[in-house]
Each structure stands twice: as structure tokens, then as C-alpha cells.
Length: 408
Image 1 (cartoon, rainbow, N blue to C red):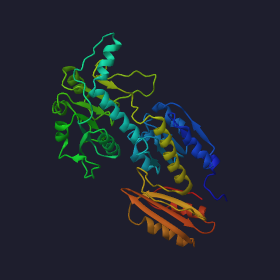
Image 2: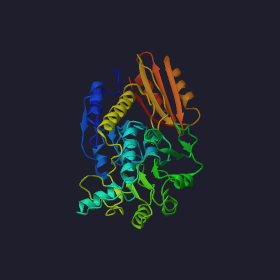
Image 3: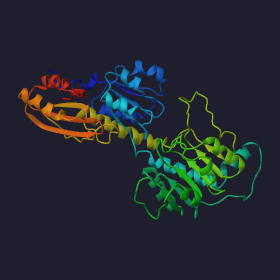
Image 4: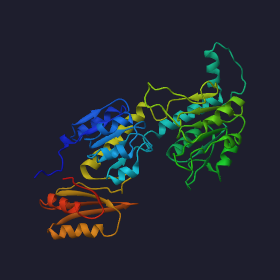
């Protein structure tokens, strides 16, 4: 009997959307050779057939992994989201199928922070409007409302990884920083928390949004919130496209209530560079529009490629689920015997049934790891001897089992 459930050269890895080449290099360095790379996203209707025999799938933000797609991928064990967000993945469906999902929550924070700061400087100087005028052959040289960023107040909505890094960079340029977050977080530097969103909107010269896509954040910035901002303030959204009412923002810019706005994310985005792009902000000189490139720097994509591929390799090699977005987190050491993975619904009696099965076959358990998360339970067991196939058959008979497999 083979010592592994599947040899590495038979594990099929598919990387979509032009994921950085160092991800494939990381897999090859770990002994994986069946790797396919594609430069573009794949339409949802084509995905089920494409992923049918895939074991490890890598995507970015455009590929939509619905329950139907995940259900069609019968061999899928893990998904790597080579980006920050995982909204494009049905995490419940992945959990119910025993598919671990990993992402890169930190690798592009610097890239996003730099873009936001650069856009804030450009907006305060009125560069987008002046550029549009110059492109039309108009010479609009005047001091007007051009302002330095030094001494201005930056209002950060969502003081997470990006917000904190932005906070430090902004203070280095002489800005005052206020922020609002729904959680109690420790300020960095001289940043000051405010009681609510309204306080940030009232005080800030630059309002920047760094919140996730959630029911509480959809439409967070609408007509009333924009009206509450300073008349010469600027708004930057590099978080999620559902957070800002773009029609209300367009109206405010046309009426001159805001000095400008920069938007990098949209409620509906093209699936490829060949698809048309439309937004209410088009044609407004004070609007600085970018096509969801906040984290799209060479450095960020290289970091993301290495980070997510490393997590997928560790999960495939050892069963380690550290930083998984949907699995119980278990950090596992190297092993010398037979390792089995058991993913199950988190109900009473499963661990006792597992140990009963091992006892009935006389298996010696060298090590065992258990962790639960919500409705999901994850057991890793190292066995002495050569009983892994017998043990696997027994584990699959246990009530509540979602997936069981032999790792080694």
C-alpha cells in the first residue's frame, strides 16, 4: 500500500487570473509538478467542468466560486484566494464539502495604503480636475483651492491592517488622524478614536474607507453621510464597492459639495479587461477612478503568491490549517508515521467515536490533534504501523463525517 493517499505528481493544481509565478515555483519546490496557470478569470458557467478534477485551486477576486461550482469539484481539498477578500467564495459550501480556504490578509496592505495616500494628495491639490481640463486643451493655472496635506485631518473608517499602516504613513506627512472602528482597537502613534462614524465625517479633510463587505457596511456612505462631510473634503474608497452610494457621490461632486473623490472598487466590476465598465462617476473631473488596483503592485502580488502558496503547501503536506478563513486552525508538526485527516460536523461524540474505531482495530495513536470552529470540527491523527487504509474506512463510517483522507 502506498504511504500517501495521492502522490504529489498526481495532485492537480490550477492557478487562475494571472497569479504571480512564484506561487507555481513554491509548489514545484515542494515537489508538486501537475500545475496549470491561466492568465484570466473563467466565466462561472465554465468553472464546474474546469475544476472537476482539480485538487488545489488558486483564484483572485474575479472568479466566483459558488456552491454549485464547489459541488462540482469532487476532488477539491483547498482553495487559495490570492488576495485579501474571500467574498467571491461561498465559504459555507466550502466548509460543508471539507474544502479549506486560505487568503492573504496582510501581503498588500502597504500597496493599498500608498495608493490611498497618493490619491489624497492628488485630490487635495485638485490634480484630477486640472488634468481633465488640460486634456481638453484648457489652461486652468490658479491657486484656487489647492491645499497641502500637511496639517490636514485624515479620517479612517475601519482601523484594521490597512487603516493602521495608513495611519502611520499619514502622520509621517504631518497629518492628524482620527478613526472609527466597530471594535476596540489600540491606536498607533497619535491617532485618536472617535465615538462614531459621524464624528469622523465631521472632522476629516480626507475620509478613507477600509471596511469589509457585510450587511452593516453596504450603503454605509450615502447621501446623508456625504452631506455631513466638510464642503471641501475628499473621499477615498479602496475597500468594497458596496460601501458607497455612487449615485449620491456623483451628485455631490457635480454640485461641488466635495473637492473630489477617488474610487478603486465598484458594486459591479467587469470580469475581464475586454468587458465594458460603467459607473455614475464617469465624466466628472473631480473623480479619480482606478480599476480595482489597490493591491495590484508587483511587490504585493509577489508577496501574496508566496504567502498563499505556502499555506496551501503546508495544508497539503501536513494538514496545517493556520490562518484558514473557514477551517478550525491547527498547527501541526512533521510526522513519521501515518497521518489521517477527519473533517466533521461539530456535534457531540465524534471524537469518542474516532478513538473507539482506533481502539477496536488495535491502532496505536502516536499523536492526535482536535480543533473546532463553529459548526466544523477537525481531527488529525498520527498512527503507528500500516493500518491507515483500515482506519480511513472506519472514519468514513462515523456519523457527522464530512471528509476523511489519508495524508501519509
